[in-house]
Image (tube, rainbow, N blue to C red; front, side, top):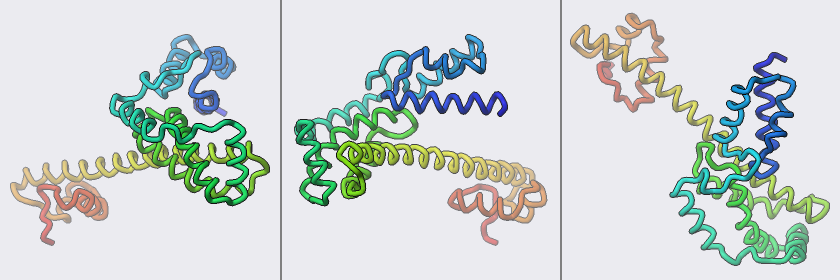
Length: 246
């Protein structure tokens, strides 16, 4: 395994460990993870900076104020105010409700959903600052919660059932973050293609002092017909300088 691949692998392992520890990792854990790579002081500082940008505290937990926007903090306050009191049960009551939910009791499943409505934003804060809105993370978590409470019957005990519920909520948030990242990559590629065709069309149109045909643009730019027509379509047929009447 080359050095770059090993570094990337270690970085993901450190992030995963930090997530398990509530978005916090000690300096000693980071140093131990990268010990074999013998990074310089400057390189280690880059690692710490990257972790902080990923909303991971070094040696101490970050507070919501450290990474949430004012709008997200306002939403969080409103959300918690709206569900105030719903999740106030003892550990014994939570276990009894969970066992009943596992047995298929619909009232227990609804009650367990209410209890976990307070847990979802706490989990969402672990994933905040990764390019998606806190409100959307909570929404995805709540949806997974609603589905999950009816899928606990296969678990051996209440602890395993609650563990599964937490995992489903986290998986839903992680999937949303990944889908959002993939969508941004697609949007970037679309914009790149549209801009390329638009630039070539503008240059040729200015040279000929008229709108150009797709065939002319193909010949002068070397772009394929598919690339040009895809760009025209993705722009909403708004690329200037191209004759769209053909």
